[in-house]
Length: 521
Image (cartoon, rainbow, N blue to C red):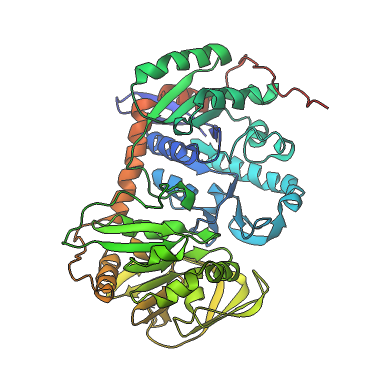
């Protein structure tokens, strides 16, 4: 479909089609650039949708259809003013171990695969991917597609469905983004292009440099030389902005010392120190980001017991492998440290299950019945059918919403519920200084979060801590999306992007050697 939009200067534009944002590496900036493009195009009046053919992440959300997709695509949907939909991420891989992943197709789990067995299913999945993308292209003026990892994984190119395989099948122009913070940006950008075969190179139209700090004049000679070497322009240099930390694709994207966000000084006269256990197969790590937005709340990921010694609140987050990560807690000594912690403890989803008395698992680990940490009088049983739900209710006297993604069911529980559903049914448990819930996103409710922090500070003996009265988490997320849109508007050649969307890749782009030369025997 084609549609006229209006830019900030009032000029009418007609655009259509789709493009692919690829990256030199994982975490190069594909997700944030795609979100920024979505925000910018939407501001221009272009009806835009996000798309990622295949995502590999344990950070997911529940969609309007009751399926699940990667969290990055939900954020990109928000940048477009859309609710999350299974159409935006038709294939999601959720790693449950070093060699296996759960496969989610159009929002529903369809089984487990190894890396090798998954390759055998890709032809079938490509049909789903292309038909879903075709539908979006019919329904929207522009589709901003995000690649996965690097497009130059030459060992995987033959059956790729997320990068150049998708671009070739759907005739998508491609922009390659690289993270200058990693060093070697020119080698990364040039090498990514040069290792592609000529037909793939014909779709690569330009480059974007991400996270630049310093004087642009120092970078300019390199940009000109890259253009001269490849025949492709650098379409933009996006500056580093420390505000861009919300909704990280995975927990490894946070700072090296494990600190989440940029802690602001306390509203009262004491800090509240939060330790979040970074489980090996952590899922929805973003649940705790709302806490990190609060003044005076220092949130840090931890992986060994000594880091709990001075924590006021301990959070055990979600996981894709509850029983395996529970065994890891015991092996590292963290299980004992959590049990000995005399302050408040919160378990979310898989973390809630670990805090219970028993876990009966014939689905994920197939370990049978195992003992939990015993901090809550709860028994859990895993069921084959996954719960996918976007509920609402009341917690700590405040209205709340959230979403559920889990196989575990509470089969026995004593004590007070943390959440009360509209029909009066309790969800989760609140027992003294320990709380647990299956709900993700609960801490994003501003009123509840303030009440929860008062509860936690009280049990931690932090009488001098006072929650700020005006932290608006949804507003913070919207402001981040606006910032991304501003960065794209100010530092990216939007006219060039619009031309790619309207006309596709230009003919005659230079082939850069070795251009997919056959391997040396």
